[in-house]
Image (cartoon, rainbow, N blue to C red; front, side):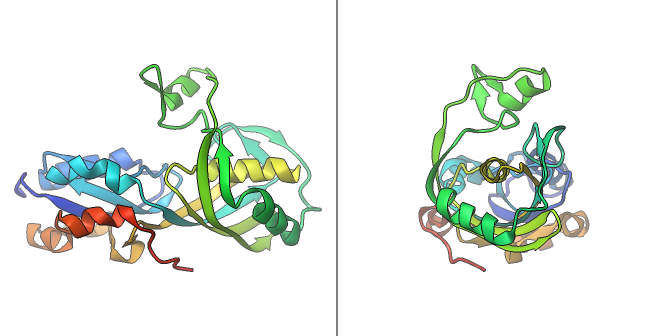
Length: 247
């Protein structure tokens, strides 16, 4: 069993259908580490960079969660779901065939780039009177939510194949990509939902630095320790500046 007294940052490539909590619990059990947290949730639909905090590093969750992030994703035109992604229930449909890539690009650049206001989705981890919104949503409840300012540094729509559109987004902390896609679909008049999402970067942490769950299943303690970034000022300061745009 690995020593429970391991401190630092472990970068993991989260697989689809795993929650961020699932990854934390797996690492905790697999290596016998008492405290494992993360710096920024990824939904089960999403894959890619999850910043795990081990031991004393869990105390740095707030600064390490406050950085900007980059994603690649796919939006699906013509449908709206209650969760704003393809895991949700379809609640509305509309024709999409007439929507061109150029129209999507123009709408995204004009209305969804820069400082914008988002209303968080009901299927989110935000709390209302101590209860997570997604738990209330499962009970069929809808709670009024206030809009929150976020910044979309870059929102690039690259390719359209039928009803699916590939995109790249560089956003500030607190930006909901599925809500960004949902709201863009509303503005286009054809609805849209998030079909796929992959996080490439969080602060200066890059996906290329990460390990997979399969790696971790086979790691020895020595191999794990080689992948852990020590908790020091340079690591914490990752949250205090934007990393390079990767695409």
